[in-house]
Amino acid sequence: MRTVSRKDLEGMIGSEVGVSDWCTIDQQTINKFADITHDHQFIHVDEAAAAKTPFGGTVAHGFLTLSMLSHLAATAGMPVLEDLVMGINYGFDKVRFVQPVRAGKRVRGRFVLGAVEEGSHGRFTLKFGVTVEIEGEDKPALAAEWLTMQVVQQQQ
Image (cartoon, rainbow, N blue to C red; front, side, top):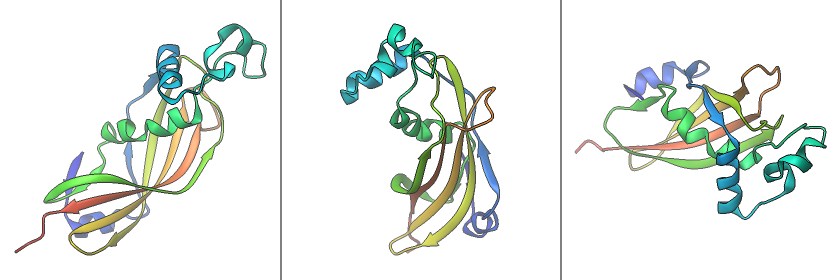
């Protein structure tokens, strides 16, 4: 993460503000996610049955890929406002699961700052266009409009 002023942040609107490190989505991670979410659909956890599908093997849950955004953002050098108290997920305006992530593939996130809105009590809502790329693939795993909130300490 890199600390920026409000003015600098507003100047970044429309720009790519971060590209994460590559992160491997392995079968063990997929299995743990299946256990936590109680989603044991065979395309995620049964390697033999999934091999017979058009995917050719097991694939990560779309929600697993989505849940990786916080981690990907943390390795992307994303901008944070000066005097930051905390950052929180605020939601999504749009999420599309474009292509499944095969077990063992690596993904990374690309983040474009789309908007910054100042609210009350030191709250700033940031909208990021996010693309999660799959190494060696033409199509991304997902595309989203991710809303985060940064809360800054108010000046007295």
